[in-house]
Structures are given as structure tokens and as C-alpha cells.
Image (cartoon, rainbow, N blue to C red; front, top):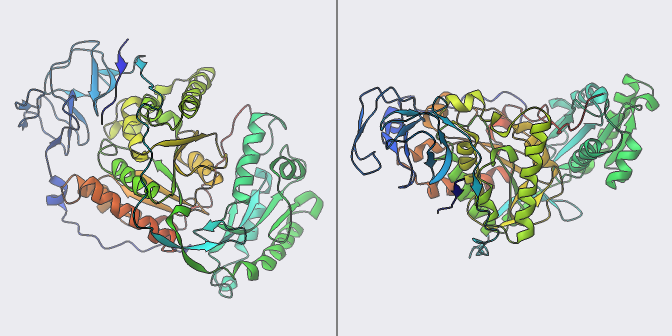
Length: 536
């Protein structure tokens, strides 16, 4: 086997922004990128017709001629590769050649596959304490009575079960723009329904995870108050939920069931009355300067392409380093999408126990996919592959770049409260709505989401910032994207400069500036707790 080694608030539709459509010069930039001298491939920065000559692209520094058309974001062999040989990108193994690959040929799913190989976890070998920033930055946050800091000021209406989701929506619908004019310091009423809560075992891992998720939202600092609505006969019983999670009902946390309250209309009326009592209290909230150390940022990537690991992900990683230096927290997740790159994280672990917990979660996923007749390399998605990502190993190596370079300070299970400061990992699926739901339940008060294909996403009560990996996407979907990381490809920004831009945007959005997804009203339907176990 080969051993892997390491190297260095409005709910109205936002109008489209005006962006320059003649961005061809910026989008052209370099013809190809070599990410590391040890790589066996270079990356096409735009579509390269057959016979295109790439100067200095071969591994020996000479030129290579593309033997076929290479789509933008895809890989070109920079040397002759024999059958069975490992192929490297980022100086890491991304797969093994299934056929002989000649210099200049397209490297993708037709000639590259995943095989087992040893990884050197080297727990903590690269651990270095983070140096604190010399200047403390602040944002305009909302300080709750218990000292927690919010980035938004919502009231939530949360369903315990799918059967109460419609009622939750009816409650929120009662508070339109006219009703909210009297409460200008409240960002809105957020209904959170889902597709679980019954048809499941009333004990065990699945129900525990659901209760932990709902409780994480009920406690979230971005909710000034919450009404929890159940049906009454579901597996996820209200009393058991509150007891298991240590929740206590009061003025700003109400609980009711449809069956006990008297049906749909009576429950909507009772919940609306509860929200009306909360609104004057919630409206007392005011923003004040607070240290950036109070930011907890969930890191997401969706609709990735061949540029994700080159532009937006490493730029977000640079922003994470700045955040951690300020004492803030960043949560990397999507365990299936760090598969094959976990050895890069275990080396940064603050302790062997932290590194071993990460590896244990990887092994859990291997067993989980196996018993569901799947495999870890079912990922990347068709869109990922169309964008140039061939294997889960390649996708993972680009995905971990979102986590920056600082020490790994903790590993958490899904929706578990994040208590450590600094860079941490939370075990979640790769499906973005499920993953981000776990991060928010764990305390994330901001989400940063990179995309190369054009994912649209929001995550109330936490605002979501969208980062485009390439300029063509940014121009095509500018009203959904907050920052264009494609400028890195054109040489207009360095990765570090883009990271500083993202970091400053984090501060702006945390201070109340609406992100593009918020302007479109995304966020209520994206509450998707992870469903484990059989649906009965």
C-alpha cells in the first residue's frame, strides 16, 4: 500500500445586482495552474481545445500539448502515468490510474479510481498553538441576558414532528410586514418544520440526535424567544424532549401540542398569542460592539467544482485563520467530504485523543455506508464531477482547505454544543442542509458557504454568506453570491487578500448587514435534522 504524506433580513426578493458582464479578461487569467511541484496533473483554468500547447506545464518543466479537449476546471496529465500508479494533486493522492495515461491527456472518471492505501495520521505532529492577533476586532452583536452573543434577533416557531410543521408556518404567517412595523429591532418570526419526529424508535441514537438538534435551536442566541409545537402522540414527545435536553419552559420558551390545545385553529391562536407576548421583550435588543471572539462560523461547501480547492476554499481558510487569531471559532464538517484527507487534520490535533476521535468518526462512516449498501466514493455528486472533481479524495483535499491552518481543538458529534474556541470539527453528512443544521444547533451564529456550481442556500436563524469559486458563476448568479473568489484565478487578489475580504464580510454580516441569501428570504425550509435509523 502507498502511504499518504503531507505538505505544506428582508423576506422580499432582492433585485439582481449590477455587475460588469464583460469580465472575459478577468476570467481568462492563466491558462493552467500547477498547485504543487509534486503534482501529476495541472488544472485547466478555462476550456482548452485539443492541441493547445501549455508552456512549462509538464512535470519536468517543458511544455505539453493537450491531446483532447479539456473542460474548464478539469485535470491534464503533466507526465506519463502507468496503470496502477497513484496520481497526485495538492501533493496528495487523489486516486490510481485504471489505464495508462499519456502526457497531455484528460484525467477524470474514465481513467482514475479510488483504492485503499495507508494514511499516516501522525497525531499532533504538526500542532502549533495559535498566536493571538495583536489588535482586537469587534462587530455589532446582540448581548443576551445570560451573556451569549447573537448576530440576529428572531423569534422561532419550531415543530417537534412533521405533523406540526404546517401549524408552525401558519403562526409565522400571522406576522407580516405590517404586524412587525411596531417591532423594528426584531428580524422576523422563523417557522422551522421538518420531516421527522415520528415513525421512529422513541429511544436510541435517532431520537437522541433529533432532540439534541431541536434543543440546540431552542437555545440558539439568535432566537430571542421560541415556541415549540408538537402534535401530541408522536415518538418525539414534548415532555421527553424537554426532560432529556434540560429545557425549561418560561416566558421566552413556550411549549404546546395540537391535540391538547384543541386542534389546528386553537393551536395557531395560542401560539400567535405567545409570540405577541414575546415581541415587546425581543424588541428591546440593541446592537453593541463585542469582540470577534464571539463569532462561531460554520464552514460549508456545496456544488463544488475544480476551482473550489484553488480559490474559495483556501480563501475561506485564510479568513478562518484570522478569525481564530481573534479568539473566534470555526466549525468544519461534512465527514464524507474530508474522507481521504483526515490525516491532514489529525496532524494538527491539539491532543492524540482529539485526533483519534476524528478517525473513529471516519470508521463509523465506513460501516454506516457499508450497511446501507453504499461506499464512501459514491461522492462526488454528478455536478461535482461535471465541474472537474473526479474522486472523493480529490474533493476532500480541497474541502479541508476551508479549515485554514490552525490547530484542531475539538471534535464534536452532530448538533453537539461546541464549547471549544478555535478550529473544530463536527461530524455531519455531506448534504449541506443537514450539515449546516447540525452546525447551527451546535451554536454557529454565522455560515460561510463556498460554491462553484451555484448552490443557493440560507440557514435561519444564522445568516449565510455565499462565496463563488469562479468569475463566470459570480457574473451569472451575482444576486445570490456575496463574494467573488474567482478574482484569485485572474491574479486580481491573492488567497490571503481574498481571505481578508471574507473576514471583513463576516464582521459586516454579523453586525446586521443582510447576506444575499437573507435578502432572498432563504432559511426557514432549510432546517433539515439528520435522520438516523429506520423509518417505521
